Image 1 (cartoon, rainbow, N blue to C red):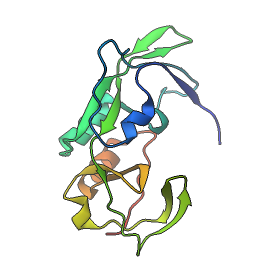
Image 2 (image 1 turned 30 degrees about the vertical axis):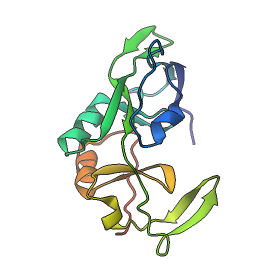
Image 3 (image 1 turned 180 degrees about the horizontal axis):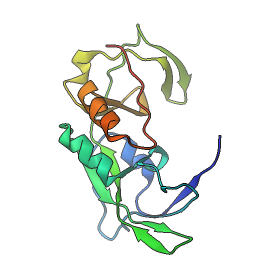
Image 4 (image 1 turned 90 degrees about the horizontal axis):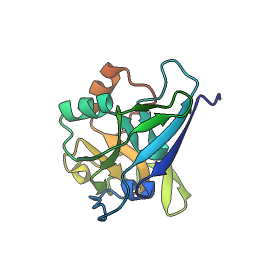
Length: 168
């Protein structure tokens, strides 16, 4: 594994607030998101930086064009520390919808903190409620996307996105 970039959150709400699956209301006077980065790749920056809930605007547009309508977006200017330039092509994305959709009898997982790490995930389609994208309640860092959305993402050739098929 090679370290190719380093992204720091400079200001803004706690990122863990963005993985709870519910709408986030910014407090009056709360500082907006701002990030800085160092990147040694060409082209720089991945389209999805999961640890910071960051997505490129191109990825967000692709999700929305595929029918995803439960995204709360916050501007996230990214300052290149080396060039002292600001990249406005990113936003912090809060996926609204935390769904207990794992079929725990058919899935295989290991406990991790208050959640699970799945080695095999089977999603109960009824519990998914027809959502095209949601956070999995049993593992809040996992985003589940409908096959239609996955196909749109794959067609976009986005960097930093890993799609793993699940059973239903």
